[in-house]
Length: 219
Image 1 (tube, rainbow, N blue to C red):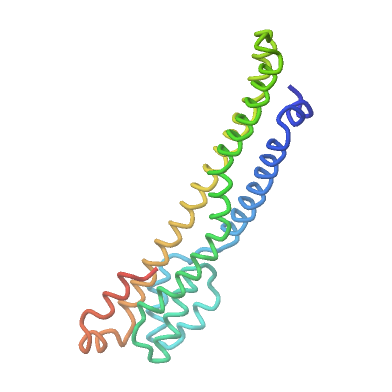
Image 2: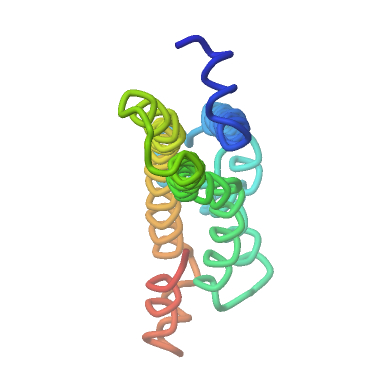
């Protein structure tokens, strides 16, 4: 069956599903490009930052590093320099902002992937209703071959709905795994940096559990 026949027999539902696929592909490509250009922190960044903290040049070191991990660490260094005590809250706020930036468009992909089969089923139901209306108008005397043709035409939209939904959900799962890995990396970098900040021991003497609770709930 040619694409022209497919759109002609599937009706408006097929056109909507085609729009679903185009929109989902555009979002997936934009998100993939974001992850490719996001940047990753260099190896042993924590050790380099610790050495820079001791020499007072940590902020300058992090200014040249890209990625959400560096953004969280940069915010922690700046907050520590300003005397902010609740560094866990700082890590949570900045990490949530970075994670939200990475996950932008995920809800739309989930909506498209979850509603595409339902939309295809809706198109099939409409087609079946039309087929049985023809049977009623013919007084029940309908050729079996003609009836079968009407039914498989109605089933086209269900097949297209599944064909659109499955790739979208696979792409969404892949992108979510990328975002989860970066969120885990942000948590690790934030925790290690808080543990190595010079003034941490003084703060733990005054509030022994404060920072542990903060970093446990961060991100």
